[in-house]
Image 1 (cartoon, helix red, strand yellow):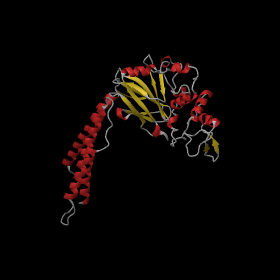
Image 2 (cartoon, rainbow, N blue to C red):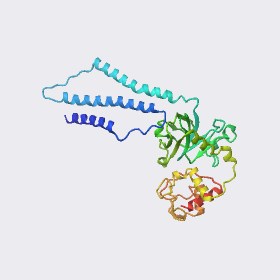
Image 3 (cartoon, rainbow, N blue to C red):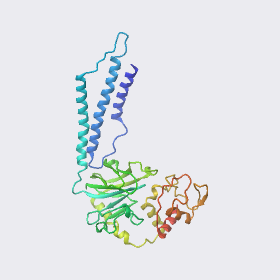
Image 4 (cartoon, rainbow, N blue to C red):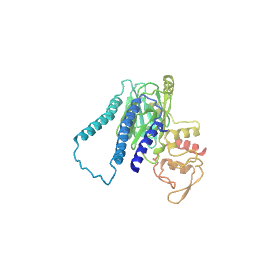
Amino acid sequence: MALAIVLILMVIGSVIFHFWSPWWFTELASNWGAMDTTILITFWVTGFVFIAVNLFIAYCVIKFRHRPDRTAAYEPENSKLEAWLTGLTGLGVIAMLTPGLIVYTDFINVPDDAVIIEAVGQQWQWSYRYPGLDGALGKADNRNVTFDNPLGIDPDDPWGQDDIVVTGAAAHIELDQPIKFNLRSKDVLHDFYVSQFRAKMDVVPGLVSYFWMTPTRLGSFEVMCAELCGVGHYNMRSEVVVDSREDYQAWLSQQTTFAESQGKPAPVGNLIERGAQLAQQHGCIACHSLDGNRGVGPSWKGMYGRTEQLADGSTVTADDAYLRESITDPGAKLVEGYPPVMAAYPMGSDDLDALVAYFKTL
């Protein structure tokens, strides 16, 4: 009897929690409300089964509880019951699968007027590539990746010369304009996810996956990696900004094409500003905090000039030489307590000077 009461209370509590739960969908910001509807239908079908099964068990516990004058009945076959169970189960499966198949059919059919934007994942940042005036993305290959060509655009492909590369900054898209996100990884498995867009997709090394959506609200929305991709996974974040048509065109006109980035002279001017720009552009902030908090790597706050305890038991002063070596050969001197996960950055002398100048201000 106690078990039956527990089951009934569990069902009642679950139903109450469903309707008054503080955890629910984030506000929708795209055309994929059909995904919410599909999930709700699944909730209702599985919820009905959950309630029916548990109440039936509670009923059986009460109705057929042990009594001295009762004996067990053995009934190996019940065709009528089997027919009802098979039919109801089939209806439940159809009710759950049909909406999903309808949504998936729409999900894989990209509108002809969709604008293609590439999102590239790497440990632990997102970068973006936009087509230029020709409206097409050029060829790209991870084997072409260099410090000056972070997305591996083919330098010999004429279609890629006017491509726009955005690293270390937010992606911008236009309101009410269908967008196809081509997804590519430079290292391991990632997942491009914006909760307000609902649509998400794995980013698989060696493949180009995609999804499409139409933004329906202006605003800035957080991009997260929804697939465990290493120790800095929690910090692999970016933003997608939905602009009006005028604001989007204004932002786009300010961006630099791939050809311009390859042909422009070395940056001059304020070294500190250049160092901050480089740190943001190459995703350094994803692993090194600026406020003293522990991250994947040591915090940059107060780093210059302090004494670091190394993994081999020795110590080193974080001076210019050490910092430059740590950027170009991060495995040479590992700080104790931090994993050896940083990739080498073969920067030129000017960029190294800019980063060290930036470090000194922190």
